[in-house]
Image (cartoon, rainbow, N blue to C red; front, side, top):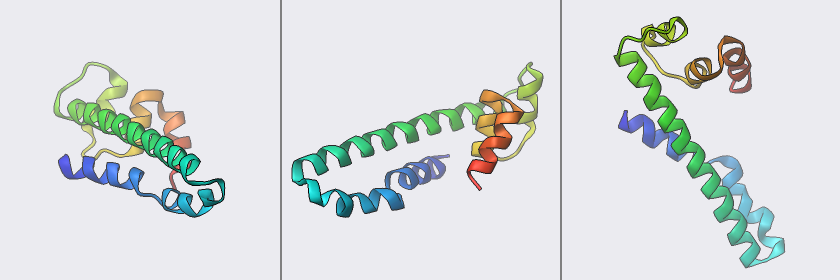
Length: 103
């Protein structure tokens, strides 16, 4: 679980777009660039923490028996993915949309 959490944080904190931001924002100056980069980094950090929390809740569901029939399917699965988190939170239709978005 710890390796997965570190991988999620690393993947969201160091992405292709984040690495390209300094060259794009260099025209506006140092201070606006730093503020923009810090803002984007903060957003990505908070979103990764939200994903870690969601993945932890799914892992807990998989460890414990639940009484909800929708969540029983999640509890019976062996792996946790973004599609699993979306299905548990929003339902099967949105899990399909999320799967297509992350292809």
